[in-house]
Image (cartoon, rainbow, N blue to C red):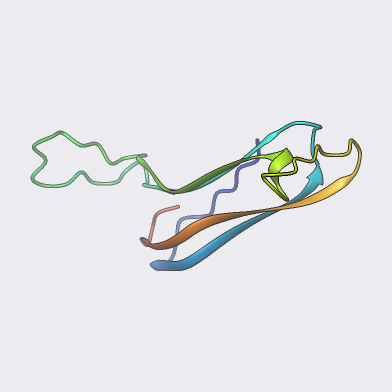
Length: 107
């Protein structure tokens, strides 16, 4: 598993449009590739007021986009290809378009 996390944002960041995740690595013969875009609230995030459902926002993780692909279908669903052991392979995963505002102070 490989995860990237930013420092808290100094200003709001709007992301709009397609996302393409690109991997270049020696991948195992069989693998699943999973890409997630998550908006993580700070641990000290204030809860909404009023809060009739007792929602806790501190540390809350909002899933923005998710895509999973079995590696052997990276080029075609009709003709699966296993990875070649020891060979570096580039794989691109297209996620649906996004239109999300990441708020200042949030990772």
